Every structure is written in structure tokens, then in C-alpha cells.
Image 1 (spheres, rainbow, N blue to C red):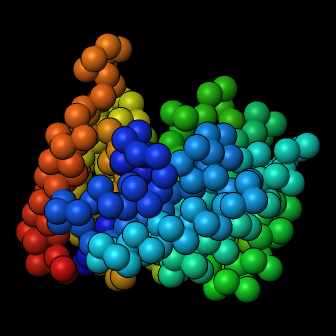
Image 2: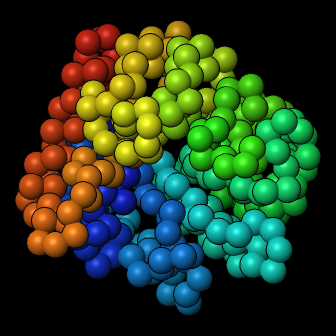
Length: 299
């Protein structure tokens, strides 16, 4: 299994996505995940609602080609998916799908919408129906650019007052079945699962063929800390065994953007860039150790 990571790790240090790509030189990583996560709400690094959005993507691709990196995954923008701002969300997400083709990316992870209207106790069907118009609107672009949209699991602890968001393999598989299109699938976030103390092996193997991507990070089980694997309480033995037994064929993609926690507000609020690069290199070595222990590491 090959190791990848999100370029969002370096967004606080750079002016654009191309510079974030270059920051990975010498860290061990060869495979990258392009993050459009904040492209609508904080568009400074990688905008999607500006006239020159495609230029930003092309420059990131050029930087990757120049420095020997390959984009293998992406994260869709956070945006409104119903109401008066849904149209902007559809435009931004469709553009991110087109960007995936430019980058050579097949799989893009997405968050479906949080709504107070539907509670976990009410079940999933109403929630699926509420999300359906947005995701149906993406299908033409998905088909045109041959890009999978992968629903990501949340955690029940993220759902105050009982609201619903898919958090289990059963709920994610149900959403894929409901959408009933071959370009929809699942991304499993191991940190979110850890917040609910889920049986990672059981959930991963239950996802089966729907599982096409991962978000790898760790936490204490109390907060979504997004720290390095093996620095929290995630059961990585169970995770790796699940990936092996499920036949997972994707990348071991890190989303560990907070190796250093922002506990300070002054001069120490952010690590020096070179220290951050050292931390990223260490996360590669940790990930290599995890996969090598099960003899599934690939360059």
C-alpha cells in the first residue's frame, strides 16, 4: 500500500497550492491529496469561485510534475448544499470535480450536509433524501470527468442535539445504495471512527467494495485532533487488518494536519516551517512502519 497525504498540512505556511506541493520535497512523500476543503469559505490558497480558479489548479499540477509528486486523491469543498447558497456550492464542487481530471485524480472525498431537521433517532432515509438533489446535480460532471465522489463518515459526537450524519459503515453503505450510481463510494476516516469508539476492523470490512479512500490520523478519543498515527488511541492493528481483509486497493492517505496542536496564542502558535517539514517526514516514517509491520508497504 502506498502512502499519501493532504497538501492542506502546509496551507498555513504558503500563498497557494503550488507552494504547498513544493514544501513536500525531502519529506518522503510521493503521493498527494489536493484539498479544496476551504475553497469557498476561505478561498485564499485554492479558490473555486473566481475566474482564475483553473490557473491555481494547473500551477499545482505543474509543481507536482516538476518536483516528482503525483496527485492521487482530493477533498471537496465545504459548502452549503441546500437553500439560497446551494447553487454556489454546486458550482464550486463541479469545478473541483473538473480539477480532479486536470490533476489525474479519480477519488474525491466529500461531506454530506449537517441538518438540524433530521435526528439520529428518526433514521437515515429522510437525511438521504435531503442530500439527494445536491449530489444528483454532480453526476453529469462526475460522468464527464470520470471522478468518484466518496461520502465520509462523521462521528456521533459531532452531531449535537441528536442530529443525523452518516457515522457507521451501515449508514454509509446505505447512502451509496440510495444514490445508486457507480461513481459514488465511501471514504473511511479512522479518527472520526475513534471518537465513537467504533470497532475499526468490523466497520472497514463491512464497507467492502464501497471503500475507496482513507483519512488517516489519530486522536485521544475525546477531540478530533488530527495528529499523527500512533500518537493517539486509534487501534492501527485493527485498521490495517481490516484493510487487508477487505481487499482495500487505495492509498494510505494521511489527514494529520495538526501534528503540533495550537495550544499557544503568541510566538509559539505555529511551528517553524522547517520543524513542520521534519514532522511531516516523521509521519511518513511512522506510516511506513505501520504498513511494513504487516508487509504491505509500497514505495
